[in-house]
Length: 295
Picture 1 (cartoon, rainbow, N blue to C red):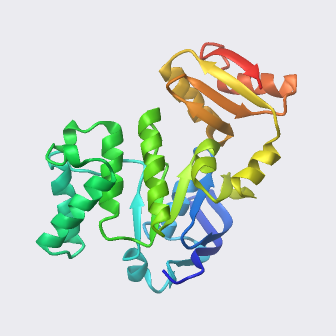
Picture 2 (cartoon, helix red, strand yellow):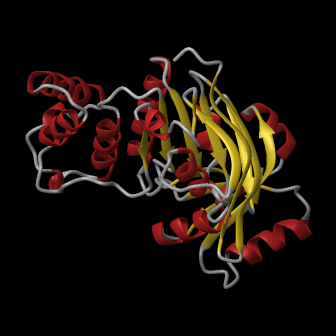
């Protein structure tokens, strides 16, 4: 793609009934970069993705994606993008190979080219050994990888990944991170949404923090971490269910999360009052957090 910006948006606004979800969002995403939109649940991340991916119309805003105006060239935008949403969209009765071959045919590839592209993607996402297995027998991580592979059959210039690692175990999350890095090294533009600063730090060159439908901060991961400061509150959770619960409550305030060790790090100013307030918010009954300490 020969455009300096893969995505340019000015003044995106969106309301649902009386609820204003997006309040004048401006975005610049350089072509060939990994861009992260960071924020808690309900911040408006998915709404922005749906607007940029032509699934929802904005109430206001001037938007260009992959060099094409969203208002007048929507079909050309759709031919240039792919979207992997929060929910995996696969047919459980098809095999992995059949899924990708079907997507190839839908993209207009010949049978031979669809089979060739299927083999390439199965190898790229480490699914060759499961190619002839029905999707219903895939693990959660394998399903996410296949879902991403299916969205890449048409070699899109801009790839939207809406919280692609939510709910994955540590190993599957790392595999997804490796896949994103590989896509970026191939020249694609990646637009990633996430609740985790750690994920944005690992993958993105530029990060925008969204909160309450407005931009609360922007910069490189290093710049954003410097603003957070040196104090971190390390939380050790009592159970995997407690880990998932607290991750959801913390949202973008989670600097890192390791489900294998049930450990989460959250930003804090280190003051006793702020720490106590944070613990009251995420564990009011004092039953989820097994241990906490400042670091």
